[in-house]
Figure 1 (cartoon, rainbow, N blue to C red):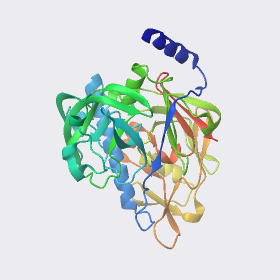
Figure 2 (cartoon, rainbow, N blue to C red):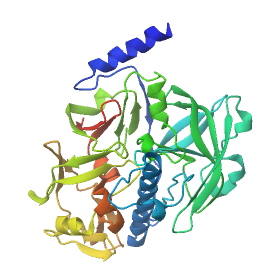
Figure 3 (tube, rainbow, N blue to C red):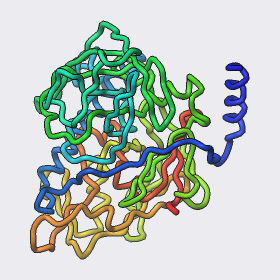
Figure 4 (cartoon, rainbow, N blue to C red):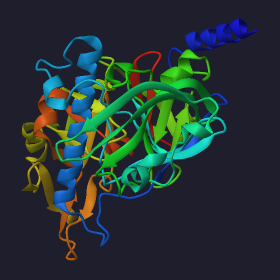
Length: 404
């Protein structure tokens, strides 16, 4: 019976050659619990710089894990020494949250609020002994789960800003949008520094196994390998309302037209090649490489290319890599992928005013010295809010469609 079921899944997957077809899969509603603005409603350039730094740390840890797992450097220069030793797990100290939803772990199920991150690979949950140091509200208790299996290994991660975490590695059942992954490997933090203000409980990485620090299959890959999902795809809609993560298919009510696909250039990050950036109707940046990262709020690029993008505007660099513009003169930006141009709304590229005058606003496209030269561009929340994005694990590609 099981072999018949698996054969049916394989046949279904083989038929999915062009446009992903809707299935009776389930979705996770997503909520944006906070923004890059401060409590008074203004944008502090220093907080933008901190967010850039946290993204740099996350991606560098992933690149170091890739090198340890594959024996090959992801880039021309090694990041192992720079990012840390083996046995580490990536945790992101990001005080400016993105989009969150719920998963369950253990038997019986324990519920957690998660940050779903396509820029990392591992699942992290806070343990009972972590207390307020881990942030969030709920704690995973392996002693309360009949399916928990301690692996007898530990992890440790330390970032340059002094934040970090230590913990143990377990296997347990994880339920994700109604689909169940058995014997899923994940890290359970026993202590942490620098995460006490986090609003989410844990982090679920959704990139490729080659980035795992345990190393282990990401949760979605486990679902695919166990035949638990109808299709090996998941999709995001990020918006002011109706945001969701669709698992095992796409939600045809949330997009219009067909998908434009771009192949992943290496099975590590969801890294693709793009055709160009346009500003106010003119090409500002030509061919580029980019990582599509749901765990990053901004669009990030190299200092030279970001400067080139803003050259035709009234932008001013107000802090290293951080740009401000007149609130009344936000540029019209588009990104061309797979031959199709996707326009970014002016609202999405305007993070908000710096003070009560409302004259100067912080843009959402900024520069990173350490990321731009190696990773190319990072297409985060700012980009993803303007498209419906499908991550096709089975065909190693990313698809984009216009929002309905």
